[in-house]
Length: 145
Image: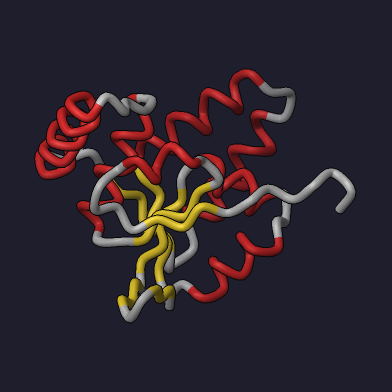
């Protein structure tokens, strides 16, 4: 399980950067996954991955690998529901009022994370701007590794 400051999170929520680093074999990302009892992939992340697959050269291979991962019993795709939309609206408004907006898809991912009561793992520092979001920001490996 993922723990921080006494809080225990059995759900690890992956954003697009986390999934990509997982696929690339990033050691800390692999450790995070190994400790989780459940993994959540917000539907917005699947849209971002599909866009990347469409733009890349290995769309079919990447889709197959993703489909296999999503088929694991510990992985759940988190849908965009009315509850997620309400989290989104609140977060979007709070960030705008604070003058610290982040990309819209990141707000949707954060909203899904809050709804799933999970800890987000990411390589994107923008998520640190979101009040109340349990988040671990990892550092990419240097090219020398």
